[in-house]
Amino acid sequence: MIRTRMGDKRKILSVVGTRPNFMKVAPIVSALERRGEEFEHVLVHTGQHYDAGMSEIFLDELGVGEPEHRLNVGSGTHARQTAAVMERLEPVLLAERPDVVLVPGDVNSTLAASLVAVKLGLAVAHVEAGLRSFDRTMPEEINRVMTDAVSETLFTHSPEAREHLLAEGRDEQQIHYVGNTMIDTLVRMRERIDALNAPARHGLKVGEYLVVTLHRPALVDGPLLRVAADALRALAGQMPIVFPVHPRTRARLAVEDPTLVDAPGLAMLEPIGYLEFLALIAGAAGVLTDSGGIQEETTFLGVPCLTLRDNTERPITQSMGTNLLLGLAPARIRDAPELLAAVRARSHQVPPLWDGHAAERIVDVLAKSETRRAISARRAVSAPTAAVGAQPPAAASSSVAI
Image 1 (tube, rainbow, N blue to C red):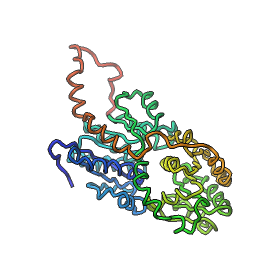
Image 2: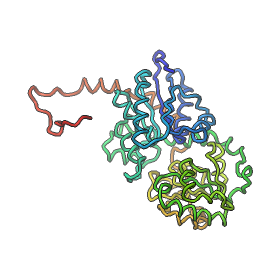
Image 3: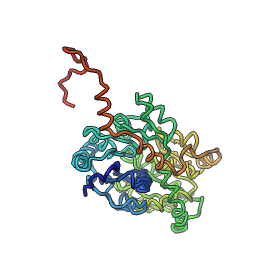
Image 4: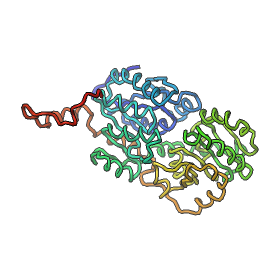
């Protein structure tokens, strides 16, 4: 459905594709709707996460509403998925003509949407800008860096993000420290999360079980998955484990260790909704993960988090929060009880501006920011005129099509 611009309202088009995207955008959608006299909002769901457990249930629980556009790109290689989003999004942007294209996070949909928008001359605003793991083997790192490079407005949620962006040559006036919209969602949903009493529903005692999530290729797509499975089997003999299994992880386990599903003390669940998942985390002794966003949610909740990665783009969850980086060393899973105790013994605090009001600050910036068209027009007027007969710089001479 194409919505034409209404009067002087600014049209914001948000592009989501995966579960974390929904949680980051939901509070912004609500904040825009509360200022309906200034804004109209259009939601595009690329379908990067396309099954009910990873997609639809989150749209329903978060109250985002039915997207105006569904691209239905599904799974595929990075190249095919990114290309499919670009190909299917372009006609939507041409028809909608938004003032700002809002892209959250660091997934393939984020990069694809930002590239299509900037090539059409549209302003791009990146939610969660400036995060860096400095590990270019991670597809998410490439997506983050490239999205920040073409974004006109950069919304950051931790202090070090500003330093990263400045080091990459971004203008300080484009950088806005607004806080964490994913925490906005958690704050808004906290009463509903607590009311679920999820641990009891799963036969678990509060503070005595571990929640596990594993999905990154470095851990799941090679021999380390079997090491992780053996360690989880051993750990389940010491404490109950709840493991909502990502579809690609389940497919790999079916090949590498099909008997893990029968391990005593280990409950391997289908993907579950946002509310139930956060309720399980809130009541857990700790979390074992290779995810990014969970490092932030556990920090806010004060729940110890053991992260099976060599690096993190969210170092504030280590320096201020409850996150302990284990390295890409799944054998350490066996030491989880001692590691969790060590994290609990540390002091921690919630990072600045993780207060439930980040979305409101984002909308305040959007209300004041220039659109790409206005910026282009201003720069065209102020640009110096080249001297007659002047030759272009040597670096500009190239036969490569871009």
